[in-house]
Length: 193
Image 1 (cartoon, rainbow, N blue to C red):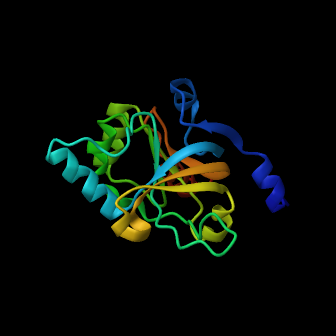
Image 2 (image 1 turned 180 degrees about the horizontal axis):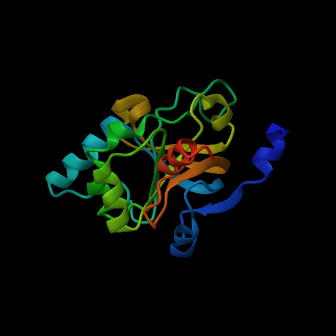
């Protein structure tokens, strides 16, 4: 039986932002440990980013090559960088995601499956989707070493943040070859594997 520490020691270490080579090497079902810079955003951030694009304005950050984590962190307790930072259900951002992928966004991370349109856009634009551990917001917050507000402060936890993360665990769900880990697991379970 694996212990929690053994599980987290066996993840593939990946530096953020992704290099094209690392992005191409990721495979659906692979467990990864992310370290480096990522950005955050939920519904309001996505709506506002797309509104800026509609108005022909620049975005507050260049999303090309970046990972966007769907999270609305809770306030930090004294002495902590951030409060609980568990993933938000990803389909809530599906209507906005293809447009951001077209700007060069390399990856998104949340929980749950993506719609067919988003999976197709990931294939077209060379992006991947990762799942963070749902229900583990307090644990995941310990992997966040720095949190900086970037834009949309009035959106509270739905604002755009820049996180510096260290050994942040995730699972590759959709890879550059179009494989979907959720579909692979479902197919294997139907076959009794």
